[in-house]
Length: 423
Image (cartoon, rainbow, N blue to C red; front, side, top):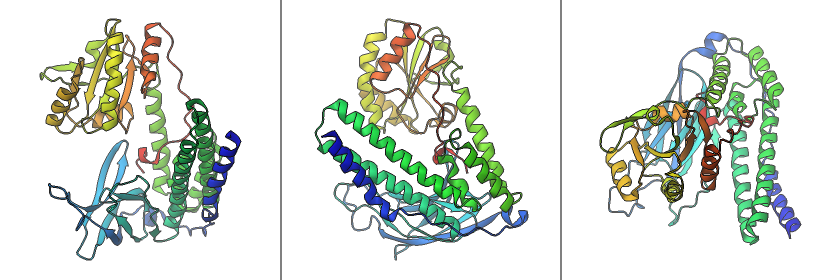
């Protein structure tokens, strides 16, 4: 049975292979330093097939349907351009480019695509608003019309799309096989690893064959800083030779160094970043005030469904460990204080509650998380013990900390998310 499932899924992965061929792009002509680093702007235009018009049937007015272009600076999103959609369902965005890099074009929060913003005007057509009665998180591939730099982005984006479709096929096939939990998890893990390795192999091919295109910088964060070091170094050398003085190359190196330093600061055993915020009664509380106790910190928000589901587990573990020198602390990153207060009352959590009044921006930067719930365990000395805990991992980590078990050493970092890079 297992062999049949594996065979079926490998075949399903290969189905995508026919259209996943990558093409070698012509080498870019060198440009002067002044041309490369001069501020400029590009135009992004296109058509959106569906907007809210004619489909929004809720009591409240439809939210504003806008096109936006943004970029991440660390874990924070910065919007660089916005545009409305006209009566012909067309849009035009003017994007100022101070430093070339990866930007995300967002279509009404329904679809988005990463582009390389530098000197190519782009045309991007979106499907837009999902008119299906039940929305399934399986967005269509979005094609960028531009030049060779964004043709490379198309190929990279398609590799990502293909990998995502493969994961859906894997999950569906394994689920339909109705296996017991243990073999299902093992098969899922093996096939997901195969899919991940396949994706990285395709990205390596793209990098190797496009190492003088400036947009190749967008692909490098996908690679492992350890396993792919030779390829990354060779690519940066070739890119520097083709584009002397190109500022984004140094920016990429600086971002990598900054991200590495931040990760090392967050290694288990190092001091947990400090914070001070108000509690429900308005009194200020600092993490340092809890030193001497093991502290479980849950970063959450009222609007986060998985956060509120995890509270069920937290209540169970709280009852188990509350008299064993363990303090629980929930820190809301809600932008809306009233929403936090309402949710805190609904959840009736019998432990300390705080509200990050800046919407969690500093916490997300200091603790390097972009999704919630994000649960951290801090030892009695105020040092990080474990991060990114969920479910049964929470109980195990708390019990280990109580028993004096040394925290786990960090695993080697294989890649850095594009979303976490500020390029």
